[in-house]
Amino acid sequence: MDGTSDFRKKYEEYLNIVNNALDSSLATDDRPGAEIYNAMKYSLAAGGKRLRPVLSLAVCEMLGGSKNDILPFACAIEMIHTYSLIHDDLPAMDNDDYRRGVPSNHKVFGEAMAILAGDALLNKAFELIASHMRKKEGDLTACVKAMEVIASNAGAEGMIRGQTLDINSECCELSEDILEYMHRCKTGALINAAVLAGACIGGAAESEYEALAEYAANIGLAFQIKDDIMDVKGSTDQMGKPSGSDAISGKNTYATVYGLEQATRLLEGSVAAAVDALACFGDKAGFLRDIAFYIRDRNN
Ligand code: GRG
Image 1 (cartoon, helix red, strand yellow):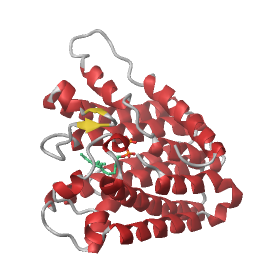
Image 2 (cartoon, rainbow, N blue to C red; image 1 turned 90 degrees about the horizontal axis):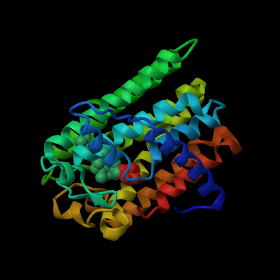
Image 3 (cartoon, rainbow, N blue to C red; image 1 turned 90 degrees about the vertical axis):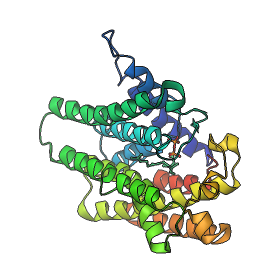
Image 4 (cartoon, helix red, strand yellow; image 1 turned 180 degrees about the vertical axis):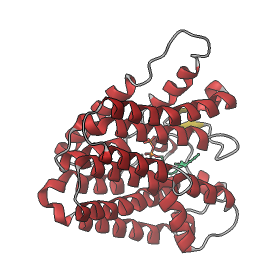
């Protein structure tokens, strides 16, 4: 991990909270069919940066909200993210044999189990949120809003729309506008959901919510541009899967459409815009600013 030691320490703190909660979220049983949990746990426990749940926790905490109140939403988003990676790796989609440095889910459990594990993680995500809400006392408006934000960003208006565009545009050249729209949906939407769920549960005022939406949109874009640059420049070890695979498979990426130099300029611009968007929060937003730099400087 890059960044100052304070940033690293805080990130690790959030990461541990998320990992502990995820570990205890998939209680298995000994009835027939429980082996689906092996496939679900395999990918959920395979590591990953946990960027999205860390963002939810950090935003909520910055606004004065409680970690316990945001944690089920943060874990749900990581489950949705993990399901999307399992499905994305399938032969019918991106056909990747490695993910997070280990064989992809379908390489270990077979395609049918990988599809089911993804489906089950998506359902578990919303079960987690619903059971948190059932136990919670008082006004549930913020929880309902956060749940709506997560569902819409993960669905046909967001991540799935981006994936649809990606699949349907392989081997044809996309305009710069459509490329940006595709990535805002495919990668940006879930990052958006993570930030805005934190904003809902943290009780953001309208102007704060808008500022955080602007921040989320820009780090989402920065994240994707950096991913595309790393696909060209990164090593296979750093990426956890073979590098250079986007160009080989005829994908439209920031690196293939703009070239590395211009893509790097766009990355800097998105990071600067993300940092600007946080101005209204002053010093309280230090960690979120550092996340924008971390996205720019990361090597995995
Ligand atoms: C299959 C419905 C469906 C959607 C798939 C997110 C996605 C849509 C596909 C992933 C393809 C991909 C590699 C996109 C680039 C950006 C991205 C989401 C990278 C993986 O996220 P990280 O780097 O992964 O946060 P870790 O492993 O750290 O969690």
